[in-house]
Length: 267
Image (cartoon, rainbow, N blue to C red; front, side, top):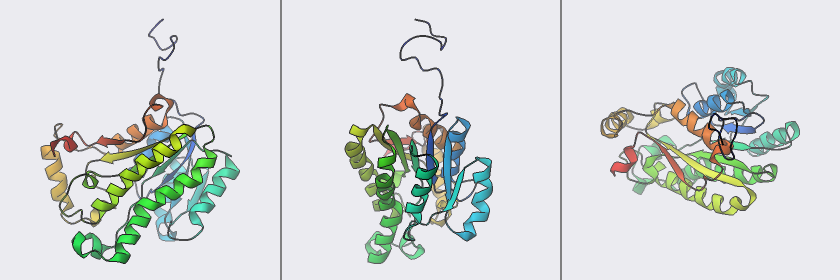
């Protein structure tokens, strides 16, 4: 057996995603976690479909999708009946199969996000849960028949789903549900060779995070307390996503992968 990458059973030569095809949902800008994931997936050879939320978002997302050489660029607001299904139908026509999905969307209306969980409206809670969590279940259900040779499903969570994070409010219970959903999907789909994993980066400056009160303070605190003394960025998320989609991670499923400089270990 040699160790130069040429011989030896089980020796990994390099991360190679050539031939893998998937969907990235949630790109809104260059600073998006979804874009960090997409960029690294593409750099390692993967091909992907990219969606944008609506006409207003298209002018920001389409240029990024074109940089990624995405063959499918479509609108997808999961609250609009039929749009998510149309994206999967297009991928089935184009490729006939899927190897991965990246779910990186979340939403809570401002009133509920900025208020106490105690005061969260029923309608606001249901919408936050639908967009941020149940949409991942819908994606998994649509992707399952296209992953007949196995695949990888990724979603994006946050430490506030495990511990109380000040000002994270209703998104805490929602992310907790998302992480639990990840485990159940992994258990149900594992026999088919489909792996399901949540990425949990520390606080990142994205368009979505700008809606959280005192987010700059949260970032400063995380950077100060993290063992590495620094925050992760979207490229850290992207490199982890590429690894998890690859065959090198074939035994990883049902877990939450922290990408936060160790901040989560401090309690």
